[in-house]
Length: 135
View 1 (cartoon, helix red, strand yellow):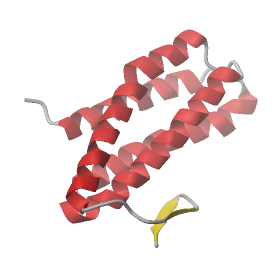
View 2 (cartoon, rainbow, N blue to C red):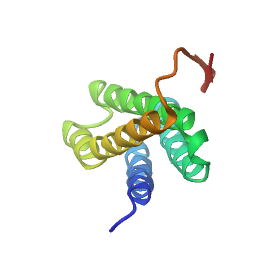
View 3 (spheres, rainbow, N blue to C red):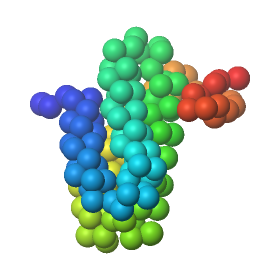
View 4 (cartoon, helix red, strand yellow):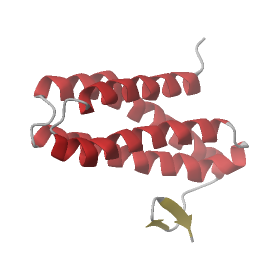
């Protein structure tokens, strides 16, 4: 049986490769702004996946929540790219159906596990420059 964490890692890794190929065709005005942001967020998702895999179970919940937020930010930027015609409908559809939906399901499952294992929901989460701070 294949390890689910490896599947998530592999899917994000493949997404990053596609993002590089896609962003290189963006017009210069978007390549170094929106394009770089998308690639950076995808790398951050991969980094957080690796981090979570190496944390003790009791420390995973907040980082999985962080991963979920970063992934949501990536999805919104990809959607913006499609809406302003940087990505064709076909490109966006391929990325969405081939990667985003599956990655989202796996992160959601991981988050569900973490909340169950962690004993509840965090009361307040404040987003402060790319970090989740729990209060």
